[in-house]
Image (tube, rainbow, N blue to C red; front, side, top):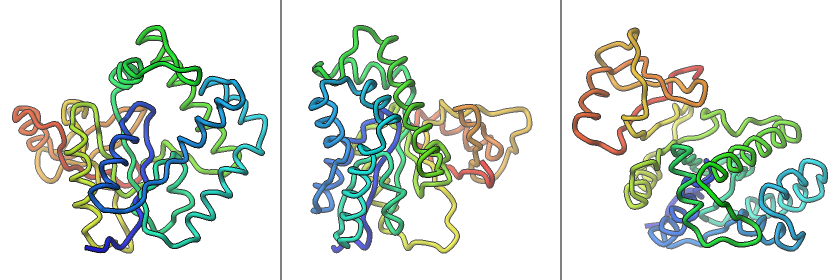
Length: 247
């Protein structure tokens, strides 16, 4: 089957973007492009860690310009691709835009388990968690200043998947299912979240589809309390939800 759109993945550091993008490209039979791999090579060439290179990029806009031109050229080529990069959704306007999230401690444990190198090395889970948070904030501030876009605004994406407990296979299956659906003129961000990480409140409506707001880096349910409770009790790792308007 010929897939109608490029898929771009971005998301939290340590959320499994690389693993998911590799498996997705294999599943779809298309080429994978990782701008993150290029960024890491550039950091190594500068003799910097990933965090140091992020901070350096805030001062030297030539680095972003080089990567921007590469993404612009790839997007203009019209190829059907899987693109792994935290700003690809900004350039590939017609792509299916997927954002991966995960619990910060889980992310820290994942990156700590990777083989260390000069670009990315940590001595503890807490150090990894702190540096990942600093790198993410550095990127966010740089993107806001240079492009006027907020990568943390989930309304930028078509699909948000939580990889905290879900397997890569489960995540890729949700992406392929979403890719097979026709694009809508007024899309609502679809979320496939770990129900354990969604906080119900006293004001959560009992009935209806689970609808959440993203506030202060957490998800709060505003509708579908019964379904949310049932999903938690069933041990689900990914549950379909919708992002509330204005979330």
